[in-house]
Image 1 (tube, rainbow over the protein chains, first blue to last red):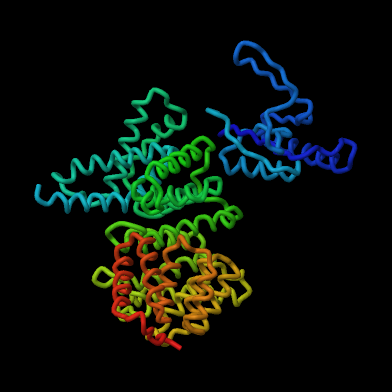
Image 2 (image 1 turned 90 degrees about the horizontal axis):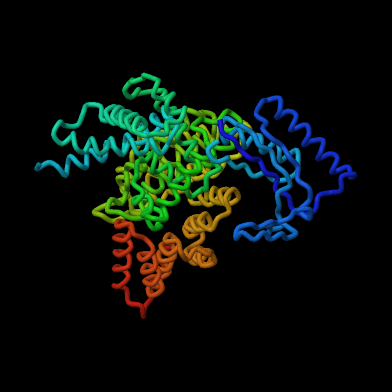
Length: 115
Length: 424
């Protein structure tokens, strides 16, 4: 058993919540998560607020600096993620494929260190 | 010890032959590729120490597997951090030495699917397969792919690291996944065979061990997937090419297809290859999937091996098959091979015009084909330059010998009076 993060890689702004496409995505994502919980492989799920709500804080040199924004130079950003416990990468990839179909974005499957 | 060099070679041969089995068996038992590989290396060291005095055991593979198994267990006991998987493995008191059938083949096939997993970069898949199943050293693989040894070592280490950290399974995929994964595995088997058939470097122009390994893996795939056309096609392709092995090199120089002694071809392998190609044709005729690249390449080689005399080769059919192949895999290399058939059908000038448009400057076969077409057109100075480029682009000694001879034959021709082309 290995713990994986299935992260949603989104490009561009999300559709406003009251649009049919956003509603359909939320519904499909909800169905996938419910099914995942039934299998016992679910650990965590979270959708993130848009990137313009992010704040970067840097405390490395003892002096804390706070800046509006995130670490991102690419157009792609983290939209949300699932954490799952899967038997192996094949199973995690299968869950990733279902998650991708539900949320409409590509998914990156990454193992947790030592888990 | 006087016989030591011979014995060393024999130990190395046994090790290479058995490497895949040993690593596969240990990976299944311990679930750890690194541990399996290290234990296999330690077993080799033990063999090199013990066999020169005690003699080669009657079942070298069994000896190596058992020894590697004990070394792996010793290593796990030494290590302070034993995870649950290792402890579980230790509790299995299965000392069955080296089962000769069934399970072992399955283990190697599992290892094959692990090494060729789509989550690994393509260049790492073939390297891992050659390292784990073929038992080649990192240095040999690096030479085969013309990269520095440190680069190849990093590539293999990174791939093994990913297999471990991401938990890439040691398992034959289920029926639906096999169809998706198969292409990657067949590509790797084909590359292993090709590397053996015409090794990029080294003293042995045809590395029979790698071609044999490729064919063996191909047969294994066919046992697993007897109904798949591409699996049958790849096996047929390898058999039909390998059947010409003995005729392909004479006195250290490569012999081209048209010059080969066709009586020296392996009739049994050709018959087996032809039967497989017929089976593929029937499957397609009965409404099966359209033939993929391996079935088409096998069909091309079936046409070549069908002709008892090279003058009877059905070049029209070969060109038509290359057209189909180009439709499936539109690569410049396929276009180059198609041009060779065009040279026979429409003349070397037509073929040269096609060849010159291909962007294959770094590919030695492009220079070889150009050189041959220029020679046939009587353009000796251009041909000479092309032979030089071809010789510079290959390290295979038999091919270099062949090209050097061809080039030397050109020197005798007076450039001021170009001869008539050989063919209309």
